[in-house]
Image (cartoon, rainbow, N blue to C red; front, side):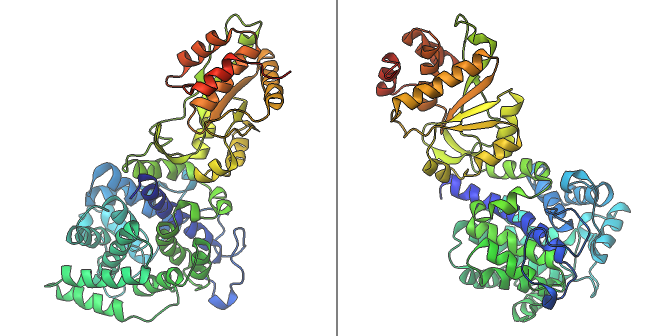
Length: 489
């Protein structure tokens, strides 16, 4: 599997869970018959800001953080869960925490008393809520390469931090096996589910209580979203299996009513794997609060596939030497690449970047205007069709001048108008950056032509571009184009 495909599914799982949770929050505790169209911004349910995830998302992020940075350590999982319960960790904007169910609350109290994490989750008959199922997904994401017995064992143990009843444990085990399989092949969810039950049965042989709970889970027919772990498992699965898109999955999940945020979070995580990050509606993703809380964790997760992220590899703007060019050094000119790109570049490596973080890096570098040379089809290929919105939110002006890669401008006169405008802006003290998909040849050609337009000898312009950014401007036709500039009056 290509690294960018796996990255899309991993990022889709986390964001799919969070977005589903946030979409379900306004409808929680409402009966199915009371729910009409499912839209972001609907009123009702908890009085929380729109686009905010609840305890479902926060506890999932706490487990993800623990697995990424401490390995599989139950005591660390317990500490991070307590950090949420006591201090509001992993909540949107770190602004507080939400009400939690009785079983999870009892587990947090047990942890506070020093009870070992593996024994913190209540096991009584009434402790069969969905709290461990709603947070268990990271076990499959981080442990995606584990064999089935190891993955099941981790799910069973992680469930016990908050929910120790066998029903909760086996639901978590089946769920992580499904998620692991969907990461490899999301084409047939029903087959994946059947295989997960069969595998769980084989792994749990010799564990009568767990096998009995597995039998009960497999035979369950409830689909009401009422909050018990078996009902939540099947309500979420019903939402996923009958849908043709992420949007439809969340709509179906919420329409079950009752514990809508949890049903939609559980279903949304799997739907995010099935349809990938790009399958989540852009308007839903961009409306989410607290993205700065989740993004570093998502980046750390996808970076494990070998891709470059905005967190580990912040966007860099390489500045040109503007000295000796009739006042041009009053401003700044830089070269960079397409912000927010998610693309397996053969020369620049595979990137899975966050548009908001990259836009913030541009703003921090003082860039006021970004000249973007990519075509629309490249924005689609790089999964960043919302680049204008992301830059605008960071206060960076966007100018589009598409040039086919790795070719020359089709309209020399229009290209010169662009360059003259940029020269004027820089001489007036402005700061601009020039970008193509990889920040290599088209961006280098445009930067060099800008220097020539400002009065520099073409070869010296090329040399300054090479000095600012290595491996830039290497295509012979583009080098010849710079040396022959200007081509039109």
